[in-house]
Image 1: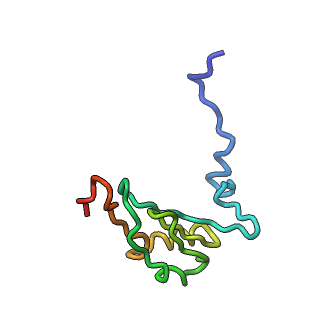
Image 2 (image 1 turned 90 degrees about the horizontal axis):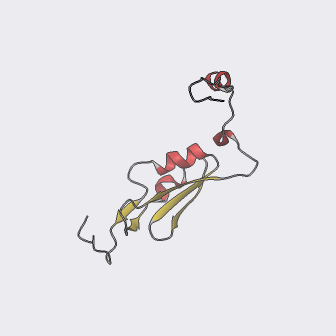
Image 3 (image 1 turned 30 degrees about the horizontal axis):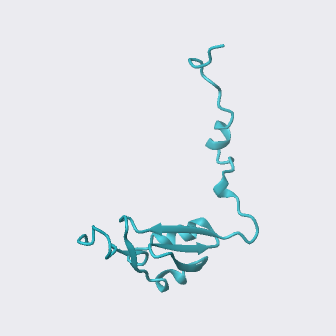
Length: 107
């Protein structure tokens, strides 16, 4: 029973190529909100600022909030709306290194 060298027919290829395959991201239960989170990329870094007003009025955006002291979350009706708001230039998030860490000299 050696199957390692034999090809296996993919049963989902036709659906994927035809755009009919349903993925988890495609599911949208009633009243479900989606969120994206951006965390400070520097270990020990702290959130310096973010401009919630810059994205608050974008389509579908419900909330923009700090998550702890090193991240920002955008909550929206659909994932793409949250992702687009998070990627808006010069609005989310600003990051400063932690004053108490050994890397405090980095800017």
